[in-house]
Length: 618
Image (cartoon, rainbow, N blue to C red; front, side):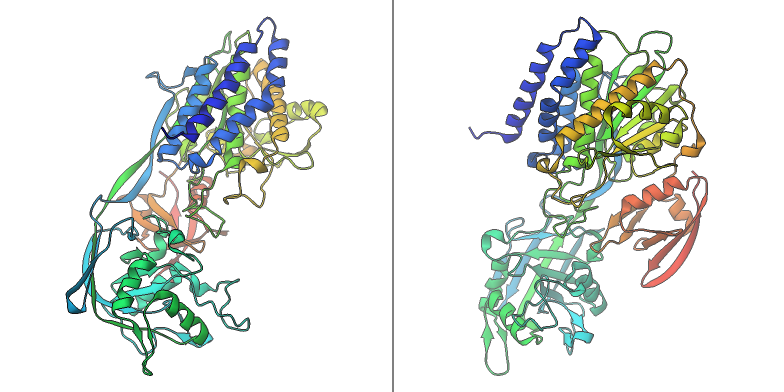
């Protein structure tokens, strides 16, 4: 039987945890805390290694791997005796984070018909894939080869010059020519804007073609083994909802073998590699109809909910303040393969492990849960340990909890948030929102006399992590963070880059801070200077990230703020007030930050900029 690497990781982590549990002596608080601190680095490392493993594929909400991460967290909470947070005895608080389009199984077909009754039926997933469209299609048309599909008049290179592809199905090569001449207008080292999927599709739309058949270039696919087909949601809004088929090079070569690219001098090119070489050497258009060839293609799509879960565990308090709640939280989701939110040129194609963002914060929550659960005495207040989902989509997990709290928000006296604590450098630690309660700054300063961090305590609210949802409800918060790195939102955010000792030091320090909050005889006093109450507000538009840092509206809920304000499907959101928008999560955050206020949206609609004023009230 084939070994399961995920299971092996799970077993290794469990052994470490069980060793810890067996070693705890609960005779006195000091000894229990001492043992917990001594074993922390090994436990922290094991948990982090599991959550950041390739096998979890970047912990994308709605994916099976995200469910595996949730199961792992539940097991860790169960091992130390924490109770389920939900009234039905579950640790999972489910939420729907939107709708996603999905290809209807078996609906995608592609058949080529050529001269002499030739017919080629391509095999889905092995020879072709399709990109999502807002609606299904069944189309047929003549094939027209357009090279790289580039129109760049300023570079004196136009592969649509002198041809008419109206109602045709165009075949194009990925990226752009790669000439050996270093003085060429194209460079393999620095692709131009014309290499982007979005630019190619925009040109196709303006030329009137009805569909795109897209083949990888030889740089992307130097051999058959590396000729990978795109997942159905990879290119998102960049395709402009044009039927888009991604075809294997070998499948297109079968057509070229029968109908080569022809020239007036009799020259013929009967494979894609030869065509690429010729275009790169001559920088001349090779566009021409593939005489006698048609393609017939169909696909159907359905919208389905994306379900995911917050993970909630509870340690009940004891004494007169037991009904008051302190939330210890961090988000456990990340970007999956980076189809949205990635800063990498490999967006959509490589696992974004999210070791620092935010496996480090999630493991901090787990480690603190262990420590408090294994103390001999219950805390003076209820402690809720929470791993939030869908933070990367715009704090959706945290917003769902505060809209549907399990424990009354009026009696939630503090929220401690961890997001990216794995890159401690020069002892620099940032704690946001210490001014959300006047009691907080003295506490963090007092314990820093022992830990000697270089503390940064920015004033005012910071809306880029889960604590903000609580802060908007008038709950004092603190957010612990060791800063961004060049690996942020890239496939480079992996386990090996984490400063494990630094992360554990942050956990040790925060434990002391939390102890002082637990020991307070009266609850922390909320200060509006650190952020205000809000009812929470949604625009009511489904957004998609484009390939070049754009955000597009792809669906509008009837009767929503977006609908009433006059937004339309296809609008690109460029700014909200003076804030530049490049990712959909920024829209959610900026909308939340402006709740109960008016905001001016700068949009691009069919190439024309216009503004829309929206009063952001539910």
